[in-house]
Length: 156
Length: 231
Image (cartoon, rainbow over all chains, first blue to last red; front, side):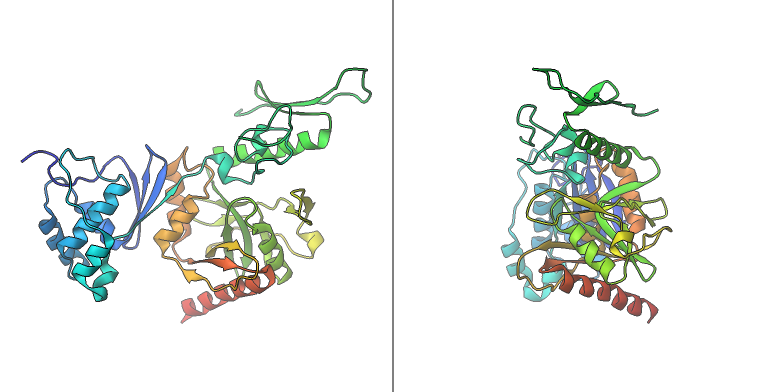
């Protein structure tokens, strides 16, 4: 078996647990991700050695609710989109949220994996700052970090 | 010493054909210049606050309005012009204690400290602000650190009715991360303090209309949260 035949979670991210959810910080891209219980469980088990049916079995045990292969494939898709998996040389089987809902039925939709992502701000963006066009005397005052020398207004 | 500021103040009187500028340096870099002194001093204050927020080893600074209510802190994270100060001011009018209209300062135990700079209130449609102390608005400034009670993520829309939805702790923590000043420099400490901060908080998100309607509702939300906790 090739080393990266199955999905493998990146190990270079910072993680913090919030109940069943996991907050993951990608230091390479400066993006934070919130993984719900299903996505977090799938991510933790993605070690590059387990197939989708094996992951489904593990998740069913861990979450105490039936988790089928469609849900696992959706989790892999969401994690892959968020770039939380080591990039695979082999194309991963994909599924959409709609297909996954169809496969498990509306009643089971609570188990659908969800990854929410937000970009970490630069200090200038995170603090109070002036929008473009506003009068300024210093770069530090502008959200863009640029105060026009001749215009005396934020730009960029 | 981490950062040395130098302020060069020019004397009154202009020579023909020569504009004399007040200058502000941070270390060896010129960071502001203007013929008027007040804008240069404002730039000094902004840079100083930003630097402290970014470089503090003991505290995590989140961009948020903060008030104290019934022994807990209510955080209103949000970007510039999102209406934080307006909402803070309205909650002060209803009896809340002022903690900040700029930063929630979080320590290692997850408590929120006051950062009681004067409220910068925009009184017309321009971006110009007038500063008011909490006391001049008839409110009291907080002194002691508080545990977090609620985080309210809202944006203003004319005529909107405040009907917020709950957020999970993970989703709420992600929102706080996205308003953290130093997360890029020190994500480990930032996430650790956010984890401590949110352990017993309520998170809601929604669109608000006028501040008077939503402010009362937000304070009630925390009262309801306290009741549930006691039960």
